Length: 103
Image 1: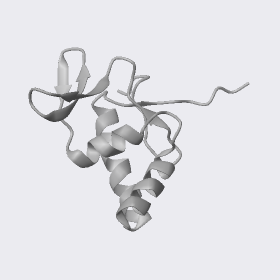
Image 2: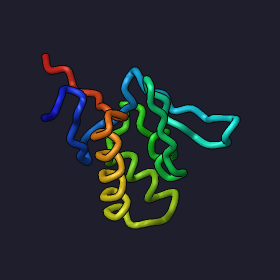
Image 3: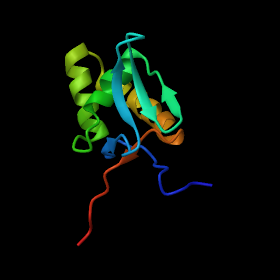
Image 4: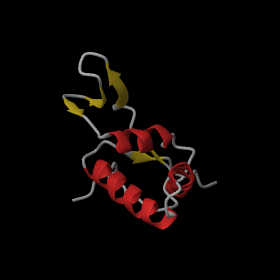
């Protein structure tokens, strides 16, 4: 059963961490973590880089464009990987998206 927080990530999605979650660098462990109430997730380096680009303004397509340019990699492969990774985070409640306000 999908709740209001669950999103379906696509190229047009503009993902952002929900208000209750923060991406922080843990000095003690020397790793990036997503802190949420009673939960901590330690994403890998690539996930951290993607999440740092997810500000609610950039679309998944924009994020993929930036990563493809940075790593000189095929955009379609990066886009597919980014969507899978972000969907996994969304399914776990660590990601939401900015929705356009319709007049």
